[in-house]
Amino acid sequence: MTEEQALAGNYGILAKQEKMAGNLKSLTGEPKRKKASWFRTILWILSMMLLTNVAMAILFYVLYHFKIIH
Image (cartoon, rainbow, N blue to C red; front, top):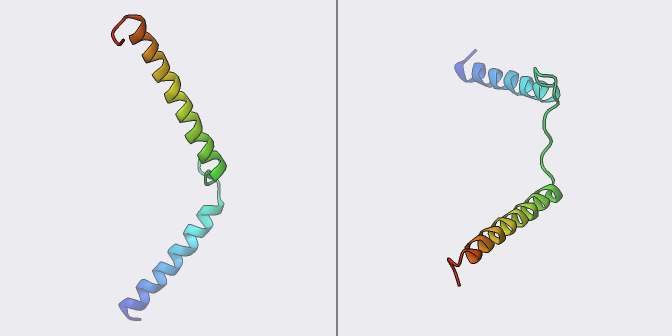
């Protein structure tokens, strides 16, 4: 068997092991996390925008209240 054939055989075995490992649960017993959906991604972006707006509003209120900005 040549070195190339041995390497190709090893890659085949590794691919099978990775596929089997992907189907198993982790050692802690938790299932593998799902890929985030577009809906969850957009919802996260909107929530971060809202959080930023609230933080900016509080900052603006504090600065305006103490007459730092006019």
